Image (cartoon, rainbow, N blue to C red):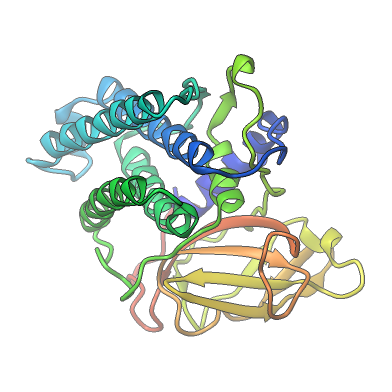
Length: 310
């Protein structure tokens, strides 16, 4: 199953479960540390379940040969260490760590597990990178940077195992708090009510129409299913985040959907897309839906055979 569509399906259901999240308080260093801890809990649980549900032999049969399974265990150990580190840091500074939520990942076999692993690792990199500018305490900033570089290595390793470019762009892609939380919330079925709401607000889901073909920059079309409702005065703009680039392209209404005939040039790898009311500004007050995630190949470099499933 294509990663973008697996995630879109999860977003459509997950955001309903995550609706109690509200923007109620300032985003200070404690909030950022608990934001990071929430993401690390999610990753830890994901790898814990994957290693429990699938054997080394099953990963090997799916094409992920030795030492892949051993390295998955190392990634799980890293995520466990990140959880312990962040929780200890929050307590040591006089704060209260957020509790672990409950999750549903929707993977069905080793291949879908590894595909989603790539997505989650990419989101983790974008989360830490996007949060860096908001961290006031320089010691926390250094610690976040130390985690970010490890998450980036995880991402490159998993992408390589999927025969994708391990470093598709010269820059990684920073994402804002609400953008990342919208993606994470897709896999969270419940928070501990004793924790109270976190200061983040998920955006509405942005489903993508199923396609069996790989996405190519400057060539592939894309359809946002059921998104015509966001064209109140004019069709909104699809904003593509790739590295440090933001590409704005106005959509067009096609029945209940919004569509682009061609993805913009200059995007590659794990690309995020939101719908914005503005042609130049994708800040939170202008975003009406998203992000969705799609894996994009440079023009002319997509695999020769289409995906058999979407």
